[in-house]
Length: 214
Image 1 (tube, rainbow, N blue to C red):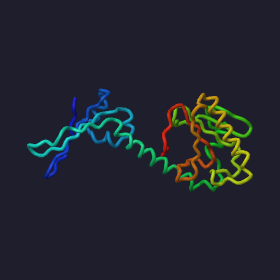
Image 2 (cartoon, rainbow, N blue to C red; image 1 turned 45 degrees about the horizontal axis):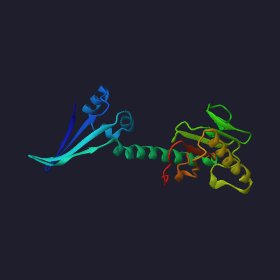
Image 3 (cartoon, rainbow, N blue to C red; image 1 turned 90 degrees about the horizontal axis):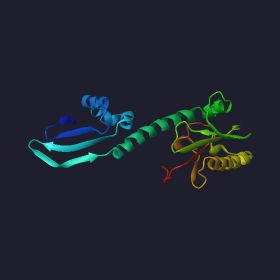
């Protein structure tokens, strides 16, 4: 079934027809009640990919064939929403970074918060990211922060632990079977979307990476 939302003006009307591709009764009903809400809701977009047919009309006239918007055209909306959330979290974390208070990573190290450990030794801990951005996404952190809230705060005394973190990243890649191709990411500061101010490395792999990373 096709559900139509029409907005009239003095010169033209925009007709947007939504056809749910999954045929889900609940989502179809939601589209009938408020079709444009599907464009505003990232959660709805993830749950129910759809095809939108857009046409411009004037009384008695029709301009061109309908434009088909595939689900791929909706991805930037989801990405923008996610990016805004990440930027807000990074700014909030940066504001309290200098307080020296414990972070979520301190609680993971102390086992107060559970994690899925991939690798651990006396200096570092590596665990799976709870919001993976690749089939393999592991976070590697030093067990002792020692002022290393971010890479930009590194001093000469941190030389050994910095090298060990990179070596641990290699060991993680080896254990996860992605040694032939993986990426190591360090976000430094709020403008780089660092959301936990305890230096950490992201080890990502298991899919083809793109460049530039974004």
